[in-house]
Amino acid sequence: VTASSLGVLLKAAGWRVTSIKIDPYINLDAGTMSPFEHGETYVLDDGGESDLDLGNYERFVDSTLTRDHNITTGKVYQAVISKEREGKYLGKTVQVVPHITNEIQDWIERVAHVPVDGTDAIPDVCVIELGGTVGDIESMPFIEALRQFQFRVGTDSFCLIHVSLVPVVGAVGEQKTKPTQHSIQALRSAGLSPHMLACRSKDKLEQNVMDKLALFCHVDPKCIINLCDVSNIWHVPLVMLEQDTLNAITDHLKLPR
Image (tube, rainbow, N blue to C red; front, side, top):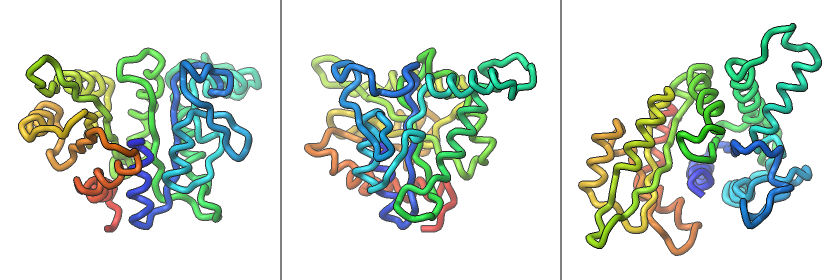
């Protein structure tokens, strides 16, 4: 929903938006996965069976995505192994770095240029959602690929938003920032430093909590988005807009307002 809402804001500002969902599981797609385990399977126009998040992207941004807009570990390894069997690596030892990470980057760059709005126009902005949790073993190749990707496209074309939960612990109802601090620390140790934080919480974050997150997570206070619970997911883009999220993103990406 966070990625979909960002897409809504960017599209409302006049930019052509596309979306990519990265799922670190080894399944080729969500078609054979139990809905009790992973939620409903969403069927795309080209017959691709994908994560429900792609359904959110299509509904929020009014786009038509393809099976290639859903990247999984299974798809990436299948592509690399097929190339190895065809001899395309010229006898080299095929490794996670650089072969798997290069395949991920090439896939993102290729799919990001596919028109999704019914015209032949190439999208201006690609919103990429990496599922899972920082520190998961299966996410590591994708995190490394994105670390490299920020230099491939340039820092002005790469904005990293970290989504984290700010839980309430104990009877006093204190909002705790430690989980976010530790996930940021793990992410930075992998070579990625978030430009913005999207903090999920039950209730609105207190100002002292926001200040603490900015101080310990090395993020500009204006780049912290508080996504507290709302009655309807369609309200989330409005919550972001009220916090000047759109301007924070366009300023970082050097997009004219």
